[in-house]
View: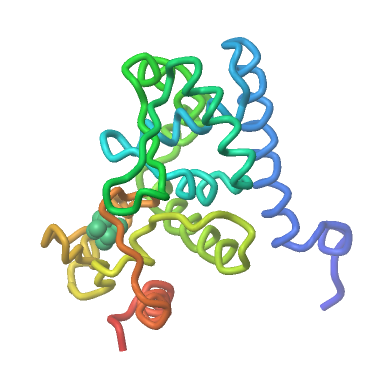
Amino acid sequence: MEKNLLEKTTDPLPHRLASALSKVSVSLKRRLWRDAAHRRISPLQAQILAFLRQRSTHGATVSDITNMLGVTMPTASDVIAVLVKRGLLRKFRTEADGRVFTVLLTTRGRRRAEQVQGWPDFLLWAAELLPVEEQESLLRTLVKLIKSIQDRGEIPVARMCVTCTHFRPYVNQDSERPYHCALVNADFGDRLIRIDCNEHEAASPEQQERQWQAFINRTPIA
Ligand code: SF4
């Protein structure tokens, strides 16, 4: 059948999806820069504070921060030094390995992190407008996108269920809760998939691949 005008002139679907995601990303960056200028804090400082807030009492090593934010070690070290000087962070050597530094928020840093905290209201508001089923489905799709981009080394490794050694995909018949977390012995579904879990332990590359295939094909691990 001959293509109609719309079919001939519209960009392919993957191109439009990438364009839509890029628009969301631009809006986030603009908001981050605007908020950061308003609060007299650089976007990277704000990202480090927000990231450490998610890590609650655990803190993070400098290399966790470089991995998560995709910045170089010297850049992260410089920004951390500024935040330590401003009394927002505490940095100390870890007991297990004296060459490794752990960074924690101070009480003041925690208050500041709450002010600059991650998700801009407008994005949360837009997500909440979606019906719950669409939120779940979008989360599942985003997990797949993140994993694919991550596998190409384009973004830092996320601590997601699909790459965790405790994740058991499609072990239950219950379509609401087909997964199992072996760490806490609990069944769950797409609604509770985590993308930055404090308890995450990376599975071996072989296990990750088996889990991944099971997840995308909606089947138990072969
Ligand atoms: S430990 Fe966390 S990341 Fe791992 S399966 Fe359980 S909830 Fe998911």
